[in-house]
Image (tube, rainbow, N blue to C red; front, side, top):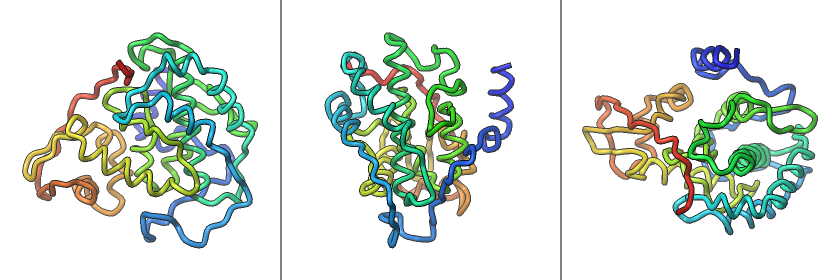
Length: 259
């Protein structure tokens, strides 16, 4: 049954299998600049400092993760995850507050999933890593796929694909800093540019490219205002010819573990 659900979600490009479950999720206005959104206010203050300290301690600059260290400090990570579960998004939250919150919920729970099952060679070796409900947002149960496809992807912000981390070598790297209302737009921009220009994630020349399968799996998210190449060219140091054929690198699901 779980396999059938997964295949059904893939067939629908994962857009309609999950919902925000009644949460007041906002969408990003992409007609505005991609830095800070102006004139936004929030009555909520979410404290991500505990996660920020853990990331700085256990994540290398290249994104590799010291999962043994996280496991030894699991009490602090579990405390942060529990804290996030108690923060119920409201309509008063700014879009930046929501983005930072949901990205951190995803990344913290992915790390928790790995250390709860550590040692492991790949997240794909675990039991339904993305489809099983593993955490709460307020009083609602969520899976990682439910959060990604039912909330984050519906916020009209394709840069989230480079902000969330799936604990694998081919994923966009996990940053050694937590997302906050103040930095989320800047960090998503940085994460997107770094990923696209990382030669181990994308091989880009003007007339020949092999790019991450992320651009295939979530193509619709990147083509609302043009082609995949148009999107990549916004961030790529090497500009790609518009008629270049798209080819994809095989995805490496081995654990993004620090040696």
